[in-house]
Image (cartoon, rainbow, N blue to C red):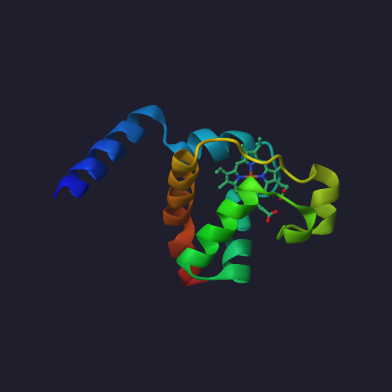
Length: 110
Ligand code: HEC
């Protein structure tokens, strides 16, 4: 019950502020030629399953490296490996949860 209330409150709050995913991910990714949806599908293909995918995403956001990237060499050559994210664990988890919820259905339909 308390959990539900908290969830509801945080959902309401994020609705007003633009959620963590929009603030921390979309804002920067808008400049890139490949959509966040395509990148998500690449992750699902390589890692599959909610836990694996989320752990891998989180790890990459903290430790981006050419040899663990799912992006092509050509893409990385043109855009370089991203910078490690320094936002708090809480916000990063929140952003990745939203990212997962947003695209997991499309992943299942594939
Ligand atoms: C400051 C800009 C910036 C921000 C903020 C950012 N990204 Fe990225 N992201 C990039 C760039 C540039 C690449 C392509 C280079 C690479 O893959 O390292 C990328 C690559 C990725 C990839 C492919 C990773 C791979 O294996 O190469 C995923 C998935 C991704 N971003 C998701 C996210 C999510 C989720 C967030 C928010 C938590 C986020 N990004 C925040 C710039 C950003």
